Length: 369
Ligand SMILES: C=C(O[C@@H]1C=C(C(=O)O)C=C[C@H]1O)C(=O)O
Image 1 (cartoon, rainbow, N blue to C red):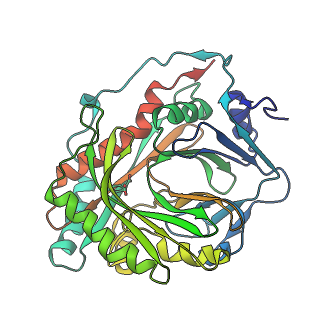
Image 2 (image 1 turned 45 degrees about the vertical axis):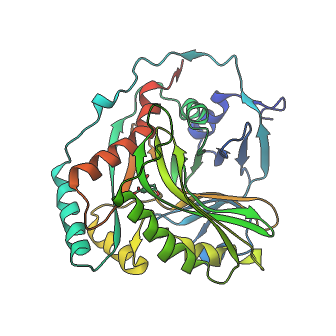
């Protein structure tokens, strides 16, 4: 049995991946504990429609766009353990590299530039108010790279984010550290957020001054989209404030609301996903435009992940600042919201900064010896 003393061995988690045993491990923002879920019996459920999540309980991994290759996956655990810490005696080798800002690519690639211009034209001719353009990069998986050690490093580095690591045969291995709630709460009290606008922290502190573009982006996602999405519920809103996301900050608006029927969370998720923070406005048209013009498959990036429980606590997050851990490579994802006034290199650098969230873990995470 894993961790009866509430200490989890990193090697145990890596071993689950090696043996292709489905699991999810996650830590909610600010929590000391993390939770390991395993499904040892029965096949992992695959769903085609978010509505099928109505009344269901389990760890959900939902893609940006559902397809045969990328279904909604529901892990229904037969083992569920809360851990307080990792095993302190774990043998670790010190990481050899750490990352500095100078290692960031500051000039966009041609491929990104081409997509950017297509997106910008659609914004400037007013087909859209906002569009999110994203990209992926591939890094070599270094020998000895331990997903579990990277998860542990993410938990200690990114205390304000939701950190997770999961494996299912349908999704492969994903690791992420995301600042964006799509839906959390229990019974009467629910919560979602509008997140848009990005700046680096200033000497580790939240920036208090936000330029016009960032404020405009936040105003769009708050005023137009989320409020309309949850129109059938009573709500309370907290006005935009800067929130931590690793070495970055975003402007955030909280929405708190009550729900008459928590058995219909799938219906609500269908309305909330994709959030304007990962898609655009108007939403349906922006979603189609992204699928047609972004030029790659986002897979589970900018979908959502987390624990769904209509009778208990639900914690679902937009899958941002994440990577797909493959046998010999790591695929990292990031995007950013474009407006008609956006500049290509500024947007590129913003995605570079977001990519650093995972890159830092790759380059500085100790490997298991
Ligand atoms: C799309 C991403 O992030 C989203 C986009 C943001 C923006 O455009 O300012 C800010 C936070 C996130 O809601 C990402 O991290 O990939």
